[in-house]
Length: 252
Image (cartoon, rainbow, N blue to C red; front, side):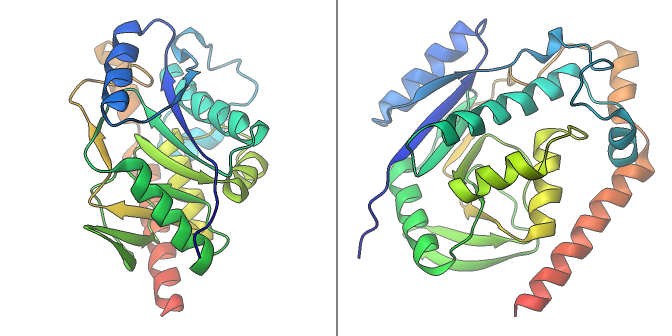
């Protein structure tokens, strides 16, 4: 029985990035995809040291460094999408960043994926549709040439995501403070809860242009700050991998 659903598509784009908007709009329209533009937060204008939702001590513990303003802006842009989604009448929403290239039948494949998940894996939170990684995952279903994977180790990068309402509500409740880039925060959260999925091969890929949403031109000092201390990052990554492995073993 086919599930009736209202599926939205959000495109994150900075107000100043008019060329990127034109490029992304043309790409989506080429595939007959209707979308709503979500104005991205320009994090380059944020003072990270005074931003109330940012936790510097936790960021240094997890990342080995403070976050850049652009990283916080990217995080806030995705939070804005979640808020818009929950205020809408959509059942599910696709969120894409403006440096995307569509490489498959995006909307139709997402609908088939959501249909299967709702019938077989109720309670899912988020699907990554732009990752080429399959670490610590398990194939759950085949959708034409694509594999739907249970992503025990949720992939990073947020080029393309699909939210359920349950997942969006949990995100708003659970991830109040900002202490990591959005993709790292989602990876840790979903790896811990084991409620993330991915599609392989991906439905979208980067078009080769650097994303304006989280990109920032920095000097050599800022580059060194971005690299941060190795141990906190290694500790976080190995902790997530061990959780993912445990969840995968326990599910078999």
